Image (cartoon, rainbow, N blue to C red; front, side, top):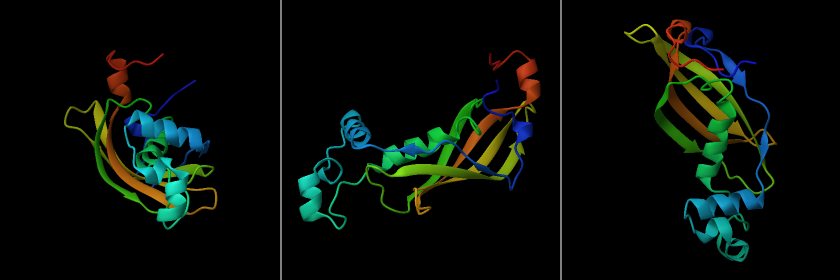
Length: 159
């Protein structure tokens, strides 16, 4: 079973639909808020959200949505990565609530072989949507991916 891809396996313009989706529960949002010490009542206090916010219910913490979106791409994009080099841009395009299911797709924008020749940078955009197909998050990042030659040198071998 393979996990991740080598640099040569990516093509500019390629679109990947990542699977499976992930339904976010109220417990996910509460635990993430506690773990990250984000105590904004907008995320954890239903009474507050009902009385003082435009959506009248708690919003899922945006960094949880970001983490899920990146995580959904690992098997297809960064499973063999040497490093995530840069998160260039993250936009929160719509609200996410407990009970929403997040789906992601990524478009390869550019690939560039490094001067070492045994690795390259993959530049991609990932879009997360909810179960209604509404865009909720967009991110761009650069990932350093080994070539097959890198793996034959004994570096970065995976089982």
